[in-house]
Image 1 (cartoon, rainbow, N blue to C red):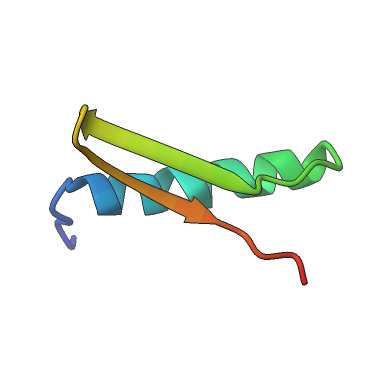
Image 2: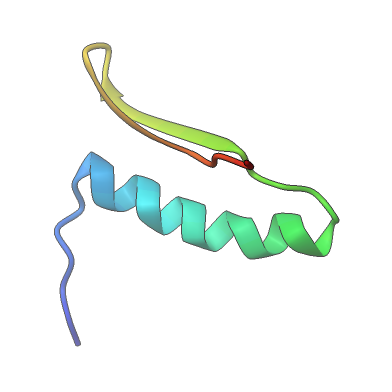
Length: 50
């Protein structure tokens, strides 16, 4: 089993990958997710639909 360091970046990617298929089943699209671990440290993923 591969251990992944639970950084804010890795948690955001994990959540994005977890939520996206569920949203697609609802005919919805996740276009942005942001996870913060403090007021000055966050990571976001934004989907460009062009």
